[in-house]
Image (cartoon, rainbow, N blue to C red; front, top):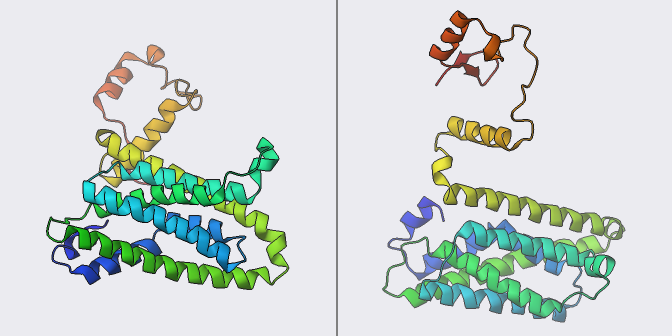
Length: 271
């Protein structure tokens, strides 16, 4: 939750909680990608209703009770698991279980319900970042959940219109596989992003707040993890990279002067 949301919700009523839930769902690309994967091959309204109901019941359970009981976890890790659910649904759409494991896909209704529990826990961890207070807590949680459902219905309607129109074209058969491969890649990218965010919360001392120093930290981490980290990047004809053969006067100068570097290739400075 942004600081603006946290400030706005201090004296907010139930309608504001509904609005916050709706906007959070509509801006939650991980939730939307998963729902898009679920909807991708569904053509009958009965099937759509069944799977969406399973997902709704699942995320409502954990959203309400985890928030009410104060059960929380690192939201980056929860969102990383949510990203894996996106990869799972894309893999299922590509018939990956039969192709690679010679087995039928797990029951989709139960899987969507279980994934709904995970998505709801992710929503709960975000909601608990707000100063909810104790007065009217249950109604606040329920209002937020209603807003989530409203946002979900809006998103599903847009997805359904797009998919119905696309299925009538010849490109749907040609590009449906590519679309689900892209969906899996998007889930993988989200997974890496969330794990990266988790590094910053778990090892905050290793990542400075300053953007320039932050960039240097990542560069140093990449260099230290490289198997070539102990080798010079290039040969220096002046032998400045080999201190054992540098003249004594030059060696003393190198030790006293701070190393300079540049970010744009023109202006050099030192820390």
